[in-house]
Length: 133
Image (cartoon, rainbow, N blue to C red):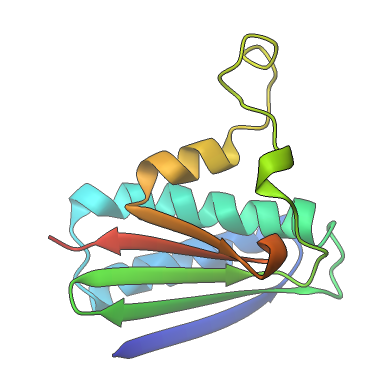
Protein backbone atom coordinates (compact mmCIF):
# COMPACT_ATOMS: atom_id res chain seq x y z
CA UNK A 1 0.00 0.00 0.00
CA UNK A 2 1.43 3.34 -1.07
CA UNK A 3 0.59 6.54 0.78
CA UNK A 4 1.42 10.25 0.46
CA UNK A 5 0.51 12.92 3.04
CA UNK A 6 0.44 16.71 3.01
CA UNK A 7 -0.82 19.32 5.49
CA UNK A 8 -1.62 22.92 4.62
CA UNK A 9 -2.57 25.99 6.67
CA UNK A 10 -6.23 27.00 6.27
CA UNK A 11 -5.80 29.63 3.58
CA UNK A 12 -7.98 29.32 0.47
CA UNK A 13 -5.01 30.18 -1.77
CA UNK A 14 -3.40 26.92 -0.63
CA UNK A 15 -5.82 25.09 -2.93
CA UNK A 16 -3.07 25.59 -5.56
CA UNK A 17 -0.80 23.35 -3.47
CA UNK A 18 -3.50 20.67 -3.44
CA UNK A 19 -3.94 20.94 -7.22
CA UNK A 20 -0.18 20.35 -7.64
CA UNK A 21 -0.39 17.42 -5.20
CA UNK A 22 -3.13 15.85 -7.36
CA UNK A 23 -1.16 16.52 -10.56
CA UNK A 24 1.86 14.74 -9.05
CA UNK A 25 -0.37 11.87 -7.92
CA UNK A 26 -1.74 11.59 -11.47
CA UNK A 27 1.76 10.80 -12.70
CA UNK A 28 2.90 8.66 -9.73
CA UNK A 29 -0.24 6.54 -9.57
CA UNK A 30 -0.99 6.58 -13.32
CA UNK A 31 -4.46 8.07 -12.88
CA UNK A 32 -6.31 8.07 -16.17
CA UNK A 33 -7.92 11.19 -17.58
CA UNK A 34 -11.44 9.76 -17.10
CA UNK A 35 -11.28 10.02 -13.32
CA UNK A 36 -8.64 12.75 -12.98
CA UNK A 37 -11.23 15.53 -13.38
CA UNK A 38 -13.57 13.92 -10.85
CA UNK A 39 -10.71 13.62 -8.37
CA UNK A 40 -9.55 17.21 -8.88
CA UNK A 41 -13.03 18.69 -8.38
CA UNK A 42 -13.97 16.42 -5.46
CA UNK A 43 -10.74 16.77 -3.49
CA UNK A 44 -10.36 20.52 -3.99
CA UNK A 45 -14.01 21.08 -3.04
CA UNK A 46 -13.56 18.96 0.08
CA UNK A 47 -10.35 20.85 1.00
CA UNK A 48 -12.15 24.14 0.42
CA UNK A 49 -14.97 23.04 2.75
CA UNK A 50 -12.39 22.02 5.37
CA UNK A 51 -10.69 25.43 5.17
CA UNK A 52 -13.85 27.58 5.11
CA UNK A 53 -16.41 25.62 7.12
CA UNK A 54 -14.27 23.25 9.20
CA UNK A 55 -11.38 25.46 10.25
CA UNK A 56 -13.26 28.75 9.73
CA UNK A 57 -10.35 30.22 7.71
CA UNK A 58 -8.12 30.02 10.80
CA UNK A 59 -4.62 29.87 9.29
CA UNK A 60 -3.31 28.47 12.59
CA UNK A 61 -5.35 25.32 11.92
CA UNK A 62 -4.26 22.76 9.36
CA UNK A 63 -6.05 20.69 6.76
CA UNK A 64 -4.52 17.25 6.30
CA UNK A 65 -4.69 15.26 3.07
CA UNK A 66 -3.58 11.67 2.68
CA UNK A 67 -3.66 9.73 -0.56
CA UNK A 68 -3.60 5.95 -0.27
CA UNK A 69 -3.50 3.39 -3.06
CA UNK A 70 -5.22 0.12 -2.16
CA UNK A 71 -5.44 -2.49 -4.92
CA UNK A 72 -7.44 -0.76 -7.68
CA UNK A 73 -8.72 2.05 -5.47
CA UNK A 74 -7.41 5.53 -4.65
CA UNK A 75 -8.51 6.94 -1.30
CA UNK A 76 -8.19 10.60 -0.39
CA UNK A 77 -8.60 11.31 3.33
CA UNK A 78 -9.21 14.97 4.17
CA UNK A 79 -9.22 16.02 7.82
CA UNK A 80 -9.67 19.44 9.40
CA UNK A 81 -9.17 20.67 12.97
CA UNK A 82 -12.66 22.17 13.32
CA UNK A 83 -15.77 21.15 15.24
CA UNK A 84 -17.21 18.87 12.57
CA UNK A 85 -20.76 18.96 11.24
CA UNK A 86 -23.97 16.96 11.12
CA UNK A 87 -24.61 15.72 7.59
CA UNK A 88 -28.34 15.45 8.34
CA UNK A 89 -28.46 19.20 9.04
CA UNK A 90 -27.24 20.21 5.58
CA UNK A 91 -29.95 21.63 3.31
CA UNK A 92 -30.74 19.75 0.09
CA UNK A 93 -29.33 21.88 -2.77
CA UNK A 94 -31.86 20.38 -5.20
CA UNK A 95 -34.95 21.42 -3.24
CA UNK A 96 -36.92 24.31 -4.79
CA UNK A 97 -36.07 26.80 -2.02
CA UNK A 98 -32.32 26.19 -2.49
CA UNK A 99 -32.04 25.82 -6.26
CA UNK A 100 -31.34 29.54 -6.81
CA UNK A 101 -28.82 29.87 -3.97
CA UNK A 102 -25.21 30.34 -5.11
CA UNK A 103 -23.58 27.93 -2.60
CA UNK A 104 -24.34 24.71 -0.80
CA UNK A 105 -23.61 22.22 -3.57
CA UNK A 106 -20.14 21.04 -2.53
CA UNK A 107 -21.06 17.79 -0.81
CA UNK A 108 -23.71 17.10 -3.47
CA UNK A 109 -20.97 17.38 -6.13
CA UNK A 110 -18.48 15.33 -4.14
CA UNK A 111 -21.01 12.51 -3.71
CA UNK A 112 -21.77 12.41 -7.44
CA UNK A 113 -18.15 12.56 -8.64
CA UNK A 114 -16.61 10.09 -6.15
CA UNK A 115 -17.21 6.35 -6.20
CA UNK A 116 -17.62 6.33 -2.42
CA UNK A 117 -17.75 9.04 0.28
CA UNK A 118 -17.50 8.50 4.03
CA UNK A 119 -17.80 11.16 6.71
CA UNK A 120 -16.03 10.19 9.93
CA UNK A 121 -15.09 11.67 13.29
CA UNK A 122 -18.21 13.84 13.50
CA UNK A 123 -17.66 15.32 10.05
CA UNK A 124 -14.04 16.37 10.63
CA UNK A 125 -12.73 13.62 8.37
CA UNK A 126 -13.88 12.76 4.85
CA UNK A 127 -12.71 9.76 2.84
CA UNK A 128 -13.21 9.94 -0.94
CA UNK A 129 -12.69 6.72 -2.92
CA UNK A 130 -12.13 6.34 -6.65
CA UNK A 131 -11.85 3.05 -8.53
CA UNK A 132 -9.02 2.98 -11.05
CA UNK A 133 -10.65 0.63 -13.59
